[in-house]
Image (cartoon, rainbow, N blue to C red; front, side):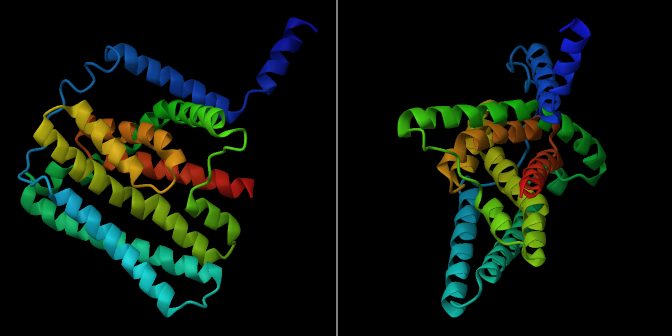
Length: 282
C-alpha cells in the first residue's frame, strides 16, 4: 500500500467526535499555556458584591428537594394507576414547575441582595450574543476532559467491581428511550435544554459559588466546592466525576466572564448534545 492510500485510509477513519476532541484539546492546551496552567486564569476576576447570608442557598436547595419530592409522592398516591409514560410526564411536569418557581424566588432575592441587582448576579441581556459563542468554545475545550473522565471512571469501576460495571444512563435519557410518546419527549427536552440549565446555574453558580467566594475569598476553591456539591446532588454516583469536571468549566466561565448566561449556555448545549446523541442511537 502506497503513501496516498495510507493517508486516504487514515482520513476516512476520522469521525466528527475525533475532530471535536482534537479541537477541544488544542483549545484546552492553548488555555493552559496562556494561564500558566490555570494559575493566572482568574487573577483579574472580581468577586460579585452581595449581602447574601451563607445559609440562603442551602435553604433554597432543601426547599426545592423537599417540595418536589413531596409533590411527586402525593401525586403517586392520588393517581396510582396512571400508565408509565403519563406518570413520568406528571413527575417531569412537577420538576419543571418547581424549578421555575424556585428561579422566580431566586430572581426576587437577587434584586435585594446583589449590588447592581440582576446585572451584578450575571444576568445582563446585552452580553447574550457574546456569551453564546464563548460557551461553544468553552464546551469544546472541556469535552475531551469529560470523555476522558468517563473512560477513567469506567476503567477503575471495572477494576474495583468487576467487568460487569458500567455507567448507567441518566434517568431522563432512560425515559426518552423507554417511552416514545411525543408530549413526554418534548417536555423532557424543554426541561433538560432550557429550564434545568437556567435553574441549576442560578442556584449552584449564581448563589452557592458566589456565597463560597464571598466567605472564602478564593475563586478556584469556591468553584471546586460548588462543583462538588453540584455533582453530588445528582442521583447516579457513577456520573459524579464527569459532572464535577463539567461543573468546574461552568464555574470558571462564570467567574471569568461575570455572566451567568455563559454557564447556562454551556450547560444547555451539553444537555442538548447528549439528548440528540441518545435519540439518534435509538
